Image (cartoon, rainbow, N blue to C red; front, top):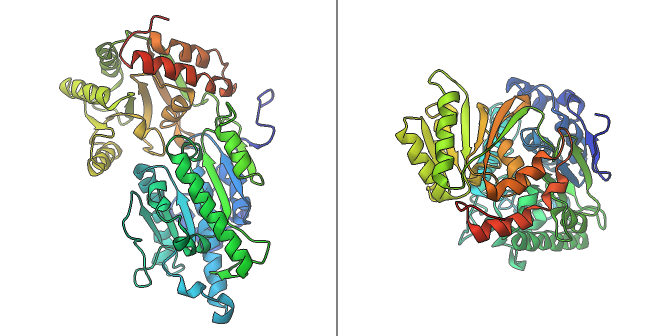
Length: 462
C-alpha cells in the first residue's frame, strides 16, 4: 500500500486485517450465532470499528461500499444492548428511577435516509436477532419506521423495540420538548449513509434531531439518571454517536467533512484505504455514445446482447438519471426479450420491493434503476453495472459501482457518457488506479449547472 494517500486525521485500515469476532469483545453467544450464519471472521472495517463502538466511543466509520459497514455498527450495538439489559436486570428500582417506566422508547436509534435503506438495515438486524431470540438468549428487539406519523406508534402496552431503525421524516416529528424522554432513553444514535443525511433536505431535519439528543443529554446530566443499565453519571456520560459512510466529500466550507468536524469534534475516525478510490475489484470501461436517450438505450441493448445469456447466473444493474429515462429503458429492454424489472420513485414501494426480490431470486436478471437503488441495496449476485446515463458526480459514480464487487467479489462496470458528461469522465479517468478521487468531488457543482441548463438528453456544445 506504499505511496497511497490517506486522510491524515483518520486511522487507515487495509484489506486482510481480519480477526475472529471473539477477539473483538463480542460475547460467546453472539459469536457462536454469527458462525452459524456463516460469519466467522470480521472484515477489515469491522475489526477496526467494533471495539471502539463497543467501548462507547463516538466513531466515524468510512469504508467503501460492500465492505461490511452495516455489521460493523450493528454487532457492537446489539452487544451493548445485551449488556445493558443484563445490568438493569440486577439493579433495584430505586436506582433505576423512571427507566423501568420507559418501555415506549428505544435504547438505540439507527437513522437512515429512506425507506429502502430502512428495510435493508432492519432485515440485516432481524437476521442477527432471530437466532439469539430463538435460543432465549436475548430480549433484544428491532423495528423499522419511516414516513410521517400522526401519533407516536409505541406505548406502555405496545413497547418500543430495543433498536429502532428509522428515517429523519419519522424521527423529526418528535424533536419537540414534549418528546424528550425518547431522546433521553436512547444511549446511541447511528447515522448510516451519513453524508446523504448531511446534505439537501435531510440536513435541517438532522440538525433538529441532534439538538434534541443534546438537549436530552443535558437533562440526563442534571438528573444523574440511569437508563437500562447505562449509568449516565453527572457530567460524564452522553449519547454515543456512530457515523457510517462510503463517501465523505471534503469540498467547500459546507462540506460533509466540515459538518462532521463541527458537530462531532471528539469522534474517532477510521477510514478504509480503498475509500474514495477506483475499486480494485471492478474492471471499468468508458464508452462514448450519442447524447439522446435512444442512443444510450441502443448502446445498452447491444452490450447486454453480448453479455447476458439465459444460462448466466449473474445479475446486472442498469443506472439512469431520471425516472422517465428509466421507464423508457425498461420498456425497450422488455420488448427485446430481456428478463428485466424497473426500480424508480414512481413505482409504489411494495412493487419496488417485489422487483428487488425478483432480482435476488433470479426471476429477473436485470434491474433498470435510478439512484434510488445506488445506496444500501445489497444483491450479492450483481456483478455487472451499466451506467446508461453517466452519474452526475463522483459520489454517485462510486455508490453505483459499489452495488457490484461486494464482500470481496469481483465485477465489471460499463460507463456510457456523452459530451455533457465528458468533463466528469475525464476527471475520473485522469486519476490513476489506486489514487484517491477526492479532487474530483469539487467538480460536481459546475457539472450540475451544465446538467440543469442543458438537460439529461441534450448534447452540450461547450
